[in-house]
Image (tube, rainbow, N blue to C red):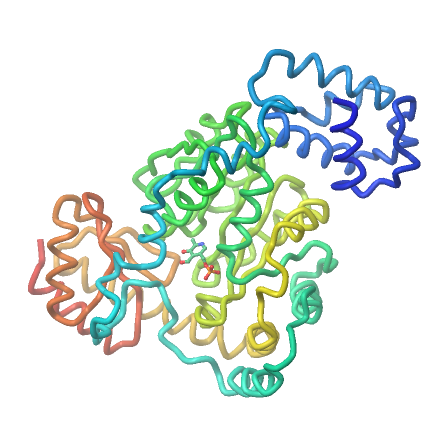
Length: 440
Ligand SMILES: Cc1ncc(COP(=O)(O)O)c(C=O)c1O
C-alpha cells in the first residue's frame, strides 16, 4: 500500500521523490490541504472506496496513511494487485450500441442517403461562423503542414482571460465529449458508479459504459432535474454526477439556489460535472463559472459546438481546480485539437458579441416555435437551450417519421418524446407545418 501511495504522490501529485518516505510527515511530504484533497480523490479512484480528505488530515506520517489504507481496504475485491485495469476489464467485450446513438443515426440521416431539407435533429447552430472566424480558419489552414500546439496555449490563455481564471484551471479538448471521456477514464475504478438524471444526454451512457462505470439513472421531475433525488442517489461508490444544465433533451434548467443546495448535499469526494453545453441560451449563462471557485469538486464542461457554431471544428473545454485539470490532460490524446480548431475558437471568443446576438435570435425563434406548438395543443416544457422537447410518449417515433417524410429531421427518443432543434425561421416553419399535420 505504501508503494501505491508513493506512486500516486510522485506521479500524480508531482511531489519530489526525495520528499516521500514512510517517516515523512504530511507537511514534509508537501501534503497541504489542496494536495491532501487531490490525494483523497486519487486514492478513492484507485482503491474503489471513498477516502475523504478528513480521514487523512488526522494522520501524521505517510506510513500512518498507508496503514490506514490497508485497514480500509482489507478484504475488498479490486484492492491493489488484484486487477490490472478494472475499467478496461469491465469495458472489454461490451457492445457499444450507444455509440451508434451518439454518432447520430437516430436523427433520420443514414450514411449515403440524402441530407434532410431541414436538419433539426442534432442541436447544431443554423448559422455559419462569422467572417472573422472564417478568416482565422483560412489563415490557420495555410499552416496545415505543421503540427498543432499540443498545449493549446493561446486558446487556454484566451479562455482564462474570459473567465478571470489562471490557465491551469482550463483543459481544452477535441469537443467536450473527449474531455468527459478523459475525466471518466481517470475517475474509473472497481465498483465505481456515475449518477445522472434521465432522460439526459445519451453520450453519458456511452462514456460510462466505455469506462466501466455502473450507471445510476435518476428520473427527471416534471419541471427538470430532481436534485434532491440525485443527491440521495450518491453513495460511497459514486465517483461522479453528470448534471446537464440546461438538460439535453428537455431544455429544462436548474437555477443557482437549487444547485447550491445540491452541491452542499453531495460529499466532496464525489465530482460534480456541470455540463453547460447549452448555457449561452439559458437565463443564467454564467452560473457554472460563478460556482466554480467555491467548490473544488465541481467541474464545468463547455463547448464551442453550439452557441459558437463550431460543431465541425471539435473544440470543447473544462474548467476545474488545477489538480483535476492536470489529471485530465494526461489522459487526453496529444495533438487532437488542430491549430485550425484552436484558431477558430480564439477568433470566436473575440467575436462573442456578434455570436451572442445570434444566440438571442435563436432563443427568440425557440420561444416562437414553442408558443405555436402550445397553440396546436402540444405539451412543451419551457426550454433554456436551442431545442424543444415534446413529451409524446408512445407516439414519439411515429411523429418523428411523419416529420422526416416532410423533409424535417427531428430526434426521437422512443417511448419518451421528440427533441426538435431550433433552426432558421424557414426550418422552423417547415417543422411547424409538419407538426400541424400531426397534432395531438
Ligand atoms: C449535453 C451535451 N454535452 C456535451 C456534448 C458534446 O459536445 P462536443 O461537440 O463539444 O463534443 C453535447 C453534444 O451534443 C451535448 O448535448
